[in-house]
Length: 277
Image 1 (tube, helix red, strand yellow):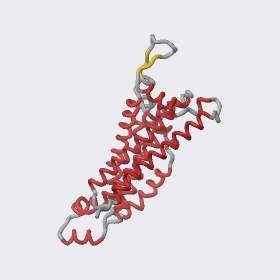
Image 2 (cartoon, one colour):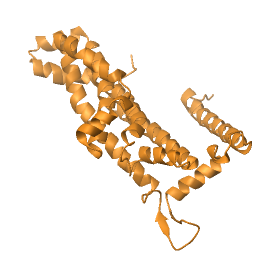
Image 3 (cartoon, one colour):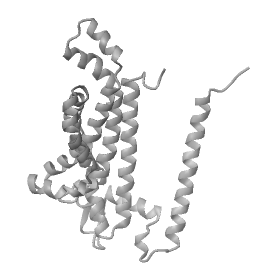
Image 4 (cartoon, one colour):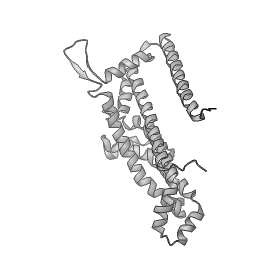
């Protein structure tokens, strides 16, 4: 007598469902592109044209109709190099968001008057769209990476801070009382009780922050954003290289999904008790 584990059966079914939906999407996309519903034709590139643009952006190729002049990728960088530069900028913004947001969230969650005083400012930053203050950051910090990292930090900082506050407020009072009865100091309470209990929420906030950072990267790279995947997506759109722009968008989206999967894997490794009774 044998039985299949639900997770074992569900895994292949899930991947088959994803593969089928991808095939349907590609077929529908190809049909729409071939139907010439939008004029001129290059505004609706087919999947094959997007793939060609992706390959071209990652290889040496001739320009100007001749073979004498060969260029490297797009804007003298391969697409993966544009992506790496953007990842570095996003990484710096996220690191700053964690370094500032986690301690501030712990303080706001444990000291009531600090939360009441600083909370409205965090909510204010969270509600602002990146384009609202990119001009100020460029004026203050210049057109190079500093202004871009600041913008990405401001996108990542609020969700990390708010997630930390929610985690602190979810710590059970019994845990704190038990630690106090054993003679734990205020610092020990924070580092050995509050912070570990808050870690799942911090990682959830980090996942949200990564999403916000990726949605902000194009705005961050509007000014002097090359090399950078967001800057290339914007520039190629302004130059009517729509296939390349779509390729950049797909790379951004797939990279964001991959990063989210990495964070979820880290979450399962670091806080395996989450979601268990």
